[in-house]
View 1: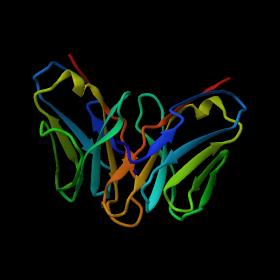
View 2: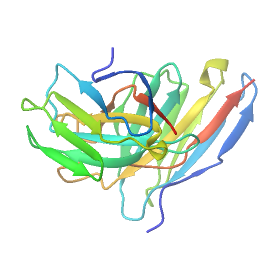
View 3: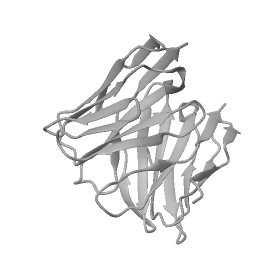
Length: 112
Length: 114
């Protein structure tokens, strides 16, 4: 059983469309991170959210941490083919020092 | 700063053999975590080392083991390889202390067991 559930598992859209990826849990996290992984590479950290209700923007990407710190979302505006990749959320429970809990990821494909 | 490096990048082994993978963390990072990634299971946590001590362990059989050296470099070993061990093995480093446990991943070692 995954501590973090991501949805949707797959997303295939046209360039210019908007999309939202969700990361949900019944557990509380002290922080939550989003990573993007491209084929043949390791995941790359995009952002860390720490405070409940926090919103962070990274160009066309908007990340939100739920008020109760149990869930997060990633919204991409006007998706581009370069956004294609596997998006992973990962949570730090704080009580387990040094360990992150990863969701299974959302595979995003953006077609030109 | 140089990123996380993993060697080798690709490896082909046969069932029953053993394998050792190596990871060099970012300079100054004292925590190294190992993950197994497969299409069906996603990223599965193997273990985490901090200052040469295993601090966390995932739910993998004892065939999977690791260690960390005084310079923070880490190795993981898989003995008696099975076909199901074919996967991308990822290493990630982090400072290991402080409020945020942000991880920086290497490119991975692609292990194929035949």
